[in-house]
Image (cartoon, rainbow, N blue to C red; front, top):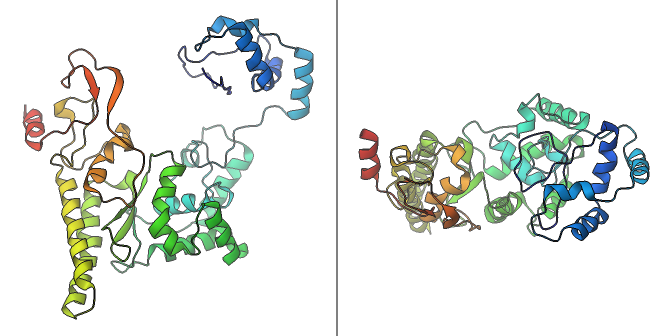
Length: 373
């Protein structure tokens, strides 16, 4: 539809929003593939069928100069179609090496917090030799990884600040070629006007993360609203109930105790730091408890299947599970997410009615009663 993009298929199931072109002879695959990527192919397609949704039968009627495109394909692919490779971290086959990545700082932060890309663990995935080599290299580097997926931006709980830990990872990944010029290039690549990692992490990382990963953030920047206050980066895939408790009572708890000590010592501004931290603690506890409006609602699950408190199912998707944190206003910056009404209707008998409304809130009491039944 629309621009009619083309891609190589591995033979998965598809619906009628796509058309599968199967060459009668295998040697014709590459010339057909090259032709299908051109505007000439699309112009011919539209001459035959002007409808928004083009019928499958239209494709086999397109004019095709096999000799010409065979020559083009032979020159471009003398050794056959190359195996998949991508430096884009939004792609499932990305190799995970920050040095080669299109968004190197984002990849480095994700690795620091324990995130890994599917290609790094799936040995059966079809990848190019270069991709396999990069996966091997990044594993051999043994880059520093935070075990619980929680890295605080200020130094908290005897841990180094996030910027210093990120700098160590970058130095190890780049090796002998690492210098201040490389850092400046990485910040520029991230579209940053900052000149150091501390400011970038504190002020720009999360907005950039949401932009790069299409408003589906998996590294969350949780803060108390003050640039000089408590901030932590968390790996959402590891943020279960126990790790949220650890964030509240271990990391934030340590920060609060330090603020209390500063207040007792009469340090200027300590009362504001302590107040902001205590308010963040209160909000995170509300998320942990999960009472409306800090609950997770999954439209396709029954009442007795809904999570009680902070107990996310990763398969439900980050845009549903992040809702309590957005409602509480504890994320560093806003991003494009809303829980409105989807097109279509719920299946007959849905407990949520006919309308596909994703913005419902459920009380803990009614969920508990449903589970007891």
